[in-house]
Image (cartoon, rainbow, N blue to C red; front, side, top):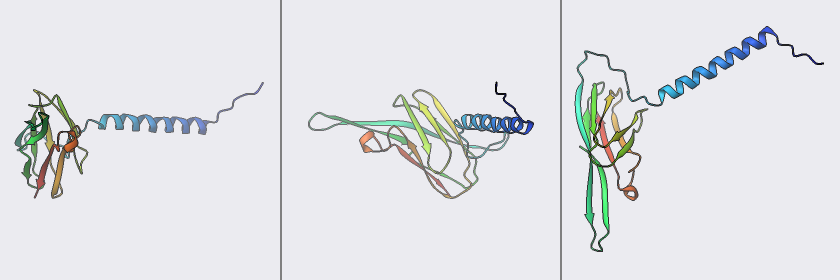
Length: 150
């Protein structure tokens, strides 16, 4: 009858590998809903910018109806390192999952709900807020807003 012999070194290596895998899994899944570019501490002055989701509809001469979804306002301006809460009110459309390109920011705006997105950019540039449901004209878009950081 064969015996299985485990050395102390093998057991320690297994425990370390298992701990690393569990830690990485916890970090990955807890990070998936992260919205902030930088953490904002309480008591600091934070500017609020309000935005809404909007929808435009029109009928073509042949009776076909077309529509387009938009963020309003379509462009917002921030200063580099300025702390801002972007408050997006869902007016039209049931939900709009979004990303801000060039960042880890993502979220969902739902109809009749306000989504608050804390922002603070450390690099100047133009960042696109893109609705993943309406990214182009073939999907009733483009539903893209521009965040200009000076």
